[in-house]
Structure formats: structure tokens, C-alpha cells
Amino acid sequence: MTDSVYKVIELVGSSPESWEKAVANAVSRADRSLRDLRIAEVTKLDVQIADGKIEAYRAKINVSFKFED
Image (cartoon, rainbow, N blue to C red; front, side, top):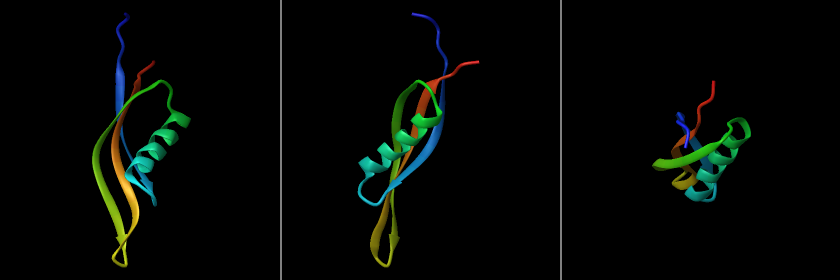
């Protein structure tokens, strides 16, 4: 196995349906601009509220990908 270095970034995904879809939205968007995604760690879950109702589910995640020169 060769030595590897990975970079970790923080993203926030949102969805009007669920936290799972909020995570999936963040990962899907990251996959369009980053290569070799490895791990997504959910660090925080919250909701946006409007007029006493949940408007959006939000998930803060740390995503790692292989760092290349």
C-alpha cells in the first residue's frame, strides 16, 4: 500500500424531506467537483423552522477525499 494523504472539508446539505436526503444531497454535490471521495462523517443535524413547521432538514458533514498535487 502506498502512502496517501486525505483532505477533509465541511459541508452542509439540506432537504425538505429528511436528514438522510440532506446528507445524500451534500455528498452528491461534492462528488461533482471532487475526486476520490472516501468518507462522510455526520457531525451535526438540525432543522430550519418557519411558522412553527419544519421547513428543511440540515446535515453538517465532514467529507474526506484523496489529496493530490
